[in-house]
Length: 553
Image (cartoon, rainbow, N blue to C red; front, top):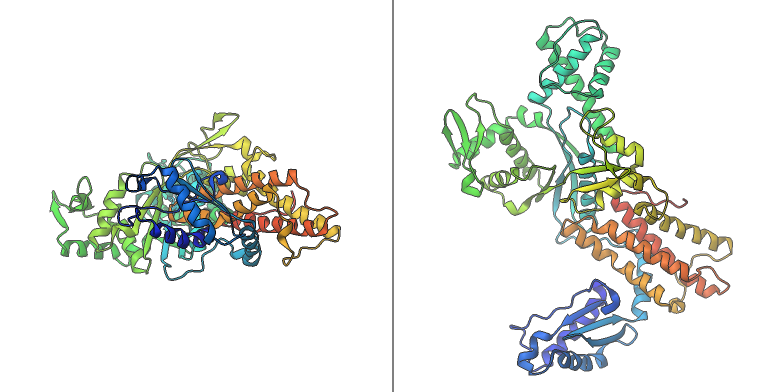
């Protein structure tokens, strides 16, 4: 609808400047797009000029309308009317709608995408990054959906966005993984080994032990404890990472980079960061530990970088990792973290600033907890992994399409109740089914038209489109580029599934009132083009969501 705004804005400003009581330095009057077309596709509030004009807001609005109407293009503007307390509402005409409808057909797969590259940024979104010591859970699945869709949105509006997964492949948790697997591995050969007190539980640990025993036999049973733990931790780590990669691929998330923490440590990048912060005077020693002056940059307290035992903290390595991101040329870096990580944000922003980067170019989004519901009750336990609910269990039960739609259908910073029963329904009650069915129905209409000898014709005369429901549908289609832009720039990816659901509702309403394929061939071809444009928008939107657009259901 920005094109419509471009049609009226210059002339609207020209009329404003003709008013002796209008002061551009004092009066801030702009065109805005209302939430509903009942009050025009754009409107402006001129009530703020009432005092200087010594007129009522409604009188001012009417005066502006009277000056505007003669200079607006006939056909492209249906009407301009004064309403309410000083509002002016602008309504596009049929010529505008028909022209823009044809543009959707011409742009096809590119409709909704930006071709402007002058403001393009190299963006990285890091998400999921789950410890490779256990299966991915439902929060990981939600983060995966949000991160993947955000990258698609950024690329759609002209940026160069990449996905990245950070693997914590060193440290105590990896040693515990090896020790947990080792205890169960030894039991398979009737050898006793104490299970670690803080070890990992769940069927997946048993599966790892059985797989390793099957592949390698008893060869690790004869090693000393430390060497066996080291060998098994690396084998188990590799297998868990492969499982995570397989799960992401199945979930249609393709990361450009899988970045290992060991890469940083092997190159001593964390120690280089330590030296850099020290050189800038941002560190000090206290009780044998090295501290970062994070309070100086707005954190609530200073943070330890190296413990009194000389061990680098996770925070120090994380600082090095984020410096590495900027060194690779990313101009803006986004992290998606799980629940209960709010407190970690200020210290990381402090570190970013201390390294000389702008904190404005680093942002963190929290993905909140997911409650799985079955029969209206919260599902509390996993079948395989103990307390956590595995991502794989949800995918296996409801499918990738439903999972992705449900995970992205609410703002990510609020808790999500995921109704498993609803996600599995093949009816209008299920939002993803409703949207996909609209796409499939259009494909069916196009096939039926071809069977009747009515082929799609993009050059058809669109003057036959005159009905209110047709205009409502076109208007909804033209909102799509704005939805994509807002979802990306405001980091609100849930706008897109909400829009597609509304579009499906508008299309179904049109379809139930008006037949597409009739004995009136010119009208049928015009409505067929309208359906094709709608199918394009559904396909483009579902592609960004990583959801299939079925042709038959």
